[in-house]
Length: 129
Image 1 (cartoon, rainbow, N blue to C red):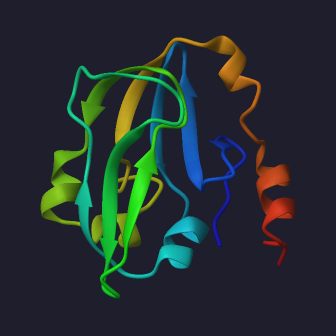
Image 2: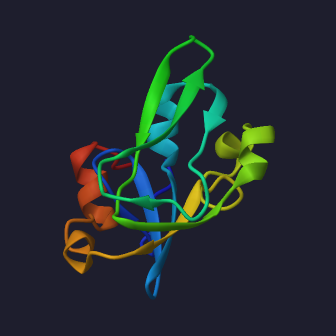
């Protein structure tokens, strides 16, 4: 499983690429493998103001399971990967590049301190090679 040192992570299997006051958010390769084959994804609306932990969308797997997507940071959604809704396989093929979910202008600096470094994510989910 791929885990990058340039990213931050959450217990809920989100990766976060920080860029100033904005962040790109996606699902980790390991998190996707735990969900199974995703066949449908519903993403939030652009310009939506959100609070950490709020429901922002869902994914449906081939096993007909639906899983909620909860926002990992408070702020405003600034962009949404609508291509992913039409070509959901991108999340499997390129989870850290073309399979991103949305970007957010984060508003709570204290929440950034709760994000995990790659070592913590690897250790928590026993992803060592």
